[in-house]
Image 1 (cartoon, one colour):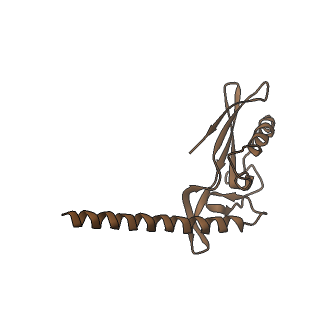
Image 2: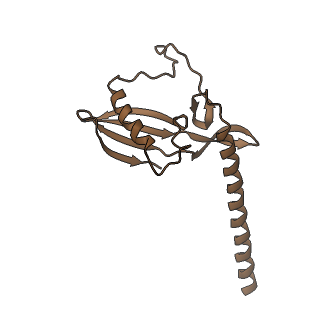
Length: 155
């Protein structure tokens, strides 16, 4: 009986070590993929180059029109985002994010939503994973003072 336990513990250790090595290799592949991205492309989830209808008004358009008043909140939050000390400079690169705006009472909410990483098959992006390169963060900005009143890191 004791030998079986010893064998199971040994096998479990090998499997965990193998999984950790596999994750590290995948992380290195993703890092290499991200560092080789085309700077001229606006990316969406899975780091697919976003192509859209520039008309803004058609039903099929992927473009968004936001109230111009949100741009004041954008100026405040983008400056605060750039100053975050817990993100690397690479993670602060805005091409790794989608931006959302909403209103809540006397606040404008600005969301920096980290785009999802791709599944990599070899060196090619195939689909979307649940991992992100950056960090999703919500900021609440007072409409009257344009001061950030709250910041929330999302998982």
